[in-house]
Image (tube, rainbow, N blue to C red; front, side, top):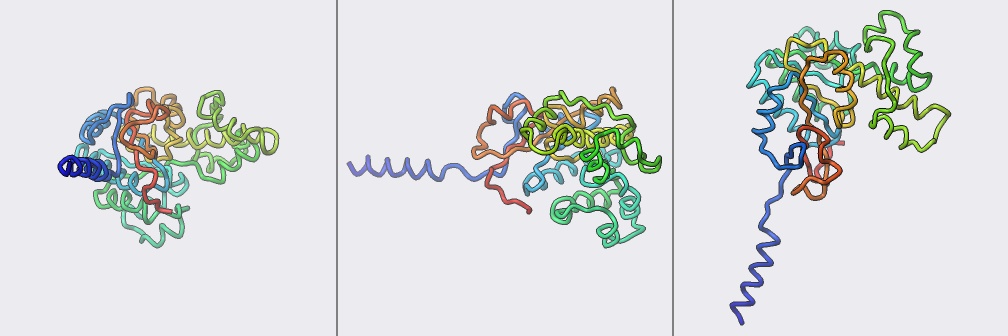
Length: 287
């Protein structure tokens, strides 16, 4: 009887403490667990790697840095880092910082920096600077994205020629029937001013188009692009535009999600990208 009781207690204790906490798990597009090395081997073959992040997730920011380091080890100075977090009209000041002409305090003051730059993106930028890698400010200036939201995409035609250098070529081809944009429109549920849902999706498209355009101009290197997961999910968003601007560019995608249980990929996340990184939903947030 004592032996049976001891065995039962051991089994319960073993079940409670057998599994060590994990910070993430990686799955392929079919929902099969894969090793980091397998993911790296596959994405290294692509011309452009999209890393779709959760902006406030500490682990996916750490993984972004690790993937950058790994791709640099593979491709050296052919690697180009491109980031949604920098707007195209900040490219000059970003270049000046990367080449050591100006100090970080000038970059922080004169570029439109995200509030979480120091915790989440600075490590990548500093790594690129140390190894003399080009960093591309790929996003549309936010004032122009806001212009699209307020007045529609045709309003971009009224910008001066100098301003148009910081956005994708006009007129923008926008297909609001794409599932991602449709989801955005439907999520508004008809709220807001007439046409505001369509303009919101068009504003998103202006970001996707501009990022796709500036990525396409880096055809000589190996590009890793960091963006919110929505912008590259299911091969839409930026990728849809990149395929128009450079049909020859091969693409690999990484998509970050949070789940309570990271031991298996939830059905809704299967197929979202070539590789899906699942992170515990209680992971520490950076803001």
